[in-house]
Image 1 (tube, rainbow, N blue to C red):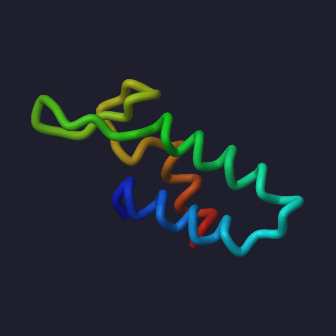
Image 2 (cartoon, rainbow, N blue to C red):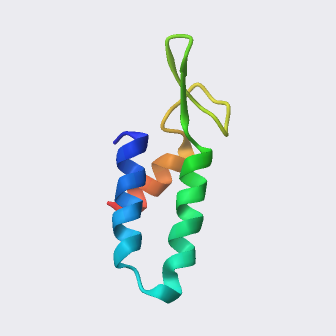
Length: 67
């Protein structure tokens, strides 16, 4: 899934979360925003991890948990 699709999925899930749990969704969104892909040198990089892999291990773990 793309970065924007992942953010949309988090927003949708957070909208249905209980008020007491809303901080968790805000924190999760902040982590995803930090790990935004950069497109350069013929590939996608993780802006936070600085690895030549996107999705990086952090985003992969989040996507797996949200499935």
